[in-house]
Length: 387
Ligand code: MG
Figure (spheres, rainbow, N blue to C red):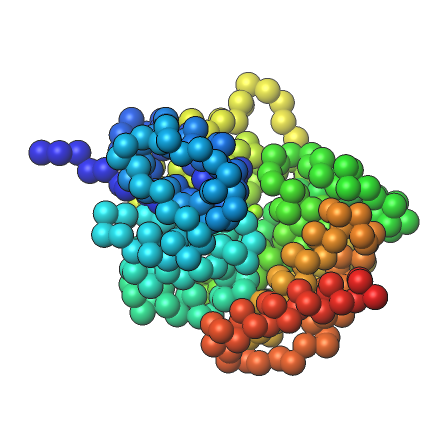
């Protein structure tokens, strides 16, 4: 009898989550296999990964980057596909069991959508899929009986803790936040923050977009929205607590007052590994807590005055409809503007607030309308900061 092998498509294989996922897959001793890889423009690393793994398919989303690369030494069994439009076709391939959706930003939505539409299990690292398209994406998953397994560490923690009780026994969910590098900064100090300072996260090693989002706490705002759709919670059931050590990844409070949490060192390999092996647990390569060392875990309420993103997250989670697409589009554009030195750090969140106020809200949008709201929000931001 042959051993069961889970065939995985890694969308975003050259990013931080993708690289961690390939380590987890390699350590699985053959029970997990990456048979498809997709990347944006880092063709050098994608080629290296392909030579090591020998996948069936690889996708380069950026055609110009694909054209610049010499592909003559690609393994003979690997087929090269060029252009982001190849991704929806690829994820529907019958051999693929699990799609790891780890492309950053709104660009990750198409892959998530196509995978769910094909009835695949999606290990979801791309929170924007739910922030932008929450109600539509979760409805699609139900209709196609496709599972969405969270890879975001907070949501993986909630997903694990929820298994200790029944749905109707859940009082609330508390997402932990490291507080980012400016947790103890005054408003005045936050206004002076440089790109280099914002890119130095104290506990997590991540890509630039999510690192800036962690510094503004917009990442937590997006995670509130993600949790609302993923676990079908009411916005008032979602809280945030600042926990600088990033050891407790989130908590679930039940109606009797019991609180269950998931703890581990800040290492994305654990939530990735949990999602890829679900419903089983396997020994793996994730770091472990060292209980022989003294350790201190601190918790404090977030300061919404210095970090106004959190209030915005709850507002958007309540509104639903097009609000998530607008917030996310505006934020992606504002973060890019900050990284290019075009706006100050403390302008990112107020710009998102203003764009949300100006947008024409639709409570029941189609997918096309969501993508249109996203485009509109980006254009608004570039128009405002260009003026
Ligand atoms: Mg997270």
